Length: 249
Image 1 (cartoon, rainbow, N blue to C red):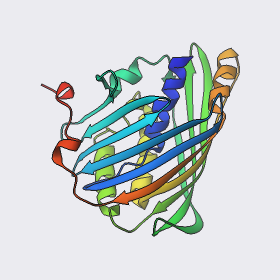
Image 2: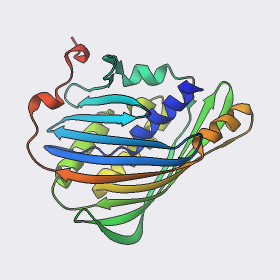
Image 3: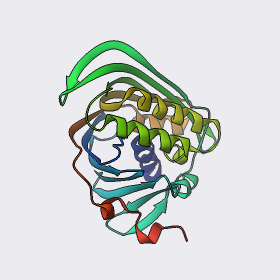
């Protein structure tokens, strides 16, 4: 069950984390209610050109994600143990497979200001079927996102996101067939519209059987994501460089 909860955390990070791009630094918080326990996460994302680093603190864990578009590489590092994990290998070892993901990102017609950025509201619905121990369950994420179309760092953000999606980097953790296209569609939709600065999502899990009941306790929760600061100050090259242990030979 711990592996399943870890899978939820990794999958959630991929789906809702806010990448920031070129010399852009984004600080964000994520809080959840419901499920088996409340969870709070903090993330600082640095992007310089086509390289990204995100430092994540969640569930008493300290992790860093590195992405290098040119090298077509994305890795997760446990900062406590220094273990380097390839996202593809990590997801391949999870005790589940994924079906076709469907994604909807539509304008709500609402606007509001966040951190001095004018944001448009978008309704989101992501439906992700999965098979766990021969049982089929469906995870649904739905809610509202506030996305800034213009402002410092937006153009750089969009350029990096599009390049990452085109290279399959942001979709690699779910790249087992048609579902990769669904995740890519959501990331591409965000990139087309700007930087998501706030998201309020309800996550539910439905299905029959014991596994569905167990996972529904973890999955039925509300998650609030907020960007609390954006900076376009220069970032040192070594901060976003792929760690030596992860560099492809």
